[in-house]
Length: 80
Image (cartoon, rainbow, N blue to C red; front, side):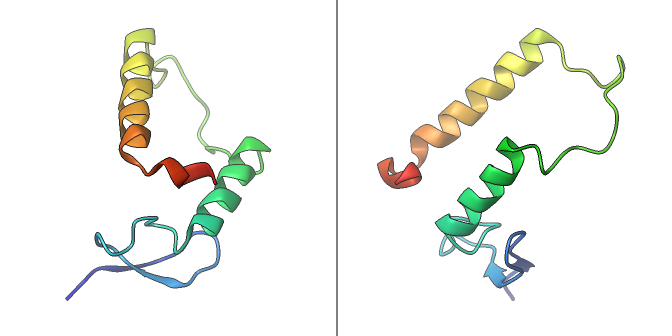
């Protein structure tokens, strides 16, 4: 039985598989709405960052490289 999650934006059911390329979102539209919420700082991580949880520069760089690699695998139409 496939895993089904709720779209964080509109709460529609999303099947967690290759047939849902925007997962956990149901569509590119919902994905971009969520991105906009983060960019306007309407969404925030609620836990304060302390010296124990703060990433060092190397960890941050590795995370950025992982994200860039993931985006490079996406279709060119990602932001269209």
